[in-house]
Image (tube, rainbow, N blue to C red; front, top):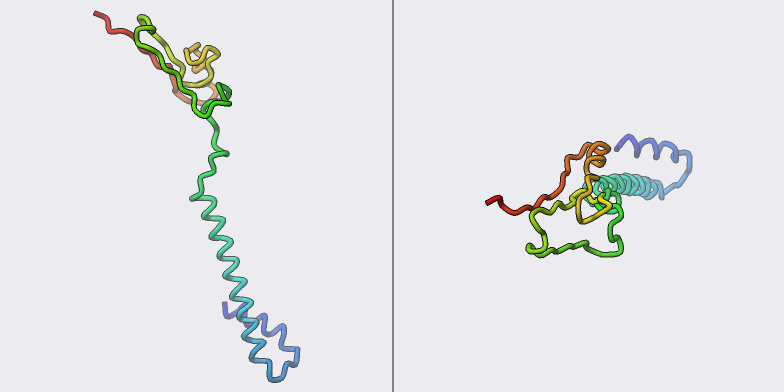
Length: 125
């Protein structure tokens, strides 16, 4: 840091400031210190934004198109109405959502994911 101050001072030594030479030297040191502090603060802020601030808009959404106007998609079913077996979609790609139509197979091939349906069935007695 001393090298930076010396270079800046040498560039301005050609000016004859008389008694104000010491004040000018302090001003140059102050400007250099503020510049370095501002640069360090900028780098710190950018690092903070990059590693610690979660930007939820950049993450891919799980639900691409089902009830997007609804703040939370919820489905409830009575156990008596399910019958012997019910198969529900967990990949959010089914055309029969909330029921599974096998769309997870294509989704898994395209993305390398391993999602499958939720299967609810009565116990065999």
